[in-house]
Amino acid sequence: MKGGFNILIVEDDPVTQSSLKSCFEKDGFRVKTASDGVEMRNVLKKGAFDVVIMDVGLPGEDGFSLTQQLRVLSRIGIIILSGMSENSDRVVGLELGADDYIVKPYNERELLLRVRNLLARLNMTSRDKSEEMRFGPWVLHPENKRAVHDKGHQVELTHGETNLLHALARRPGRVLSRQQLLDAISGRDWQPSDRTVDVLVRRLRGKLEEDSSKPRLLLTVHGVGYQLSLRGGRPGDWLPDLRNNY
Image 1 (tube, rainbow, N blue to C red):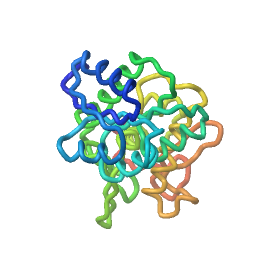
Image 2 (image 1 turned 90 degrees about the vertical axis):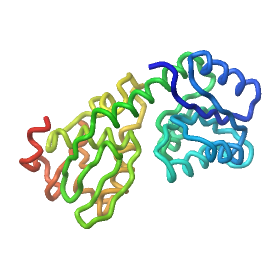
Image 3 (image 1 turned 120 degrees about the vertical axis):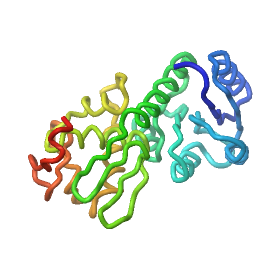
Image 4 (image 1 turned 180 degrees about the vertical axis):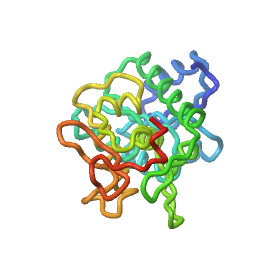
């Protein structure tokens, strides 16, 4: 996957901003830049973007705050760049809606590959996962990245949430390990300490469960992984009409 995509780089350091802009433009991407939240909003008003690369240490509103605001308004791909390497900081970034979190110092070629992988996953979700899938009172619409309840209300999903839910809904009643779910949502290797799956499950429970503290759809199987239970929160339950989705 090369070129033809619009990238917005939100970075206040002029040297880093220029270097990243040059790196992506040489690879055929169309690149715009911003130095803070105000400039970012002005740029976003003027055009559509596929991915935002967001530095955390921005003047005024920091990258975490801007990521949260962006995720409320859009399902655009977001990659956070941060000098904070603690696992808790990574989890915060992912919980706020980022799709990837890269610790400084980083290799520009690696960042380029991360962006390509994210674009491929976004494209795969919209192109290959168009079938609607029912689970409990919900219907997942992967192509539109939303879940619609039988009562009519709907929730918007990020592409990571969509892919994880899609993987579980294709195997209702079956326990999937974190590694299996990581493969489903990312298609690349992750460090063992990465808690991306736990973050996504927690976000999905907040959107889909009647009481996220007592989940009945997205169940934890301790020491193994997660399971989508479609009736009453009991392991092994699934609806017959989904068995062909294995």
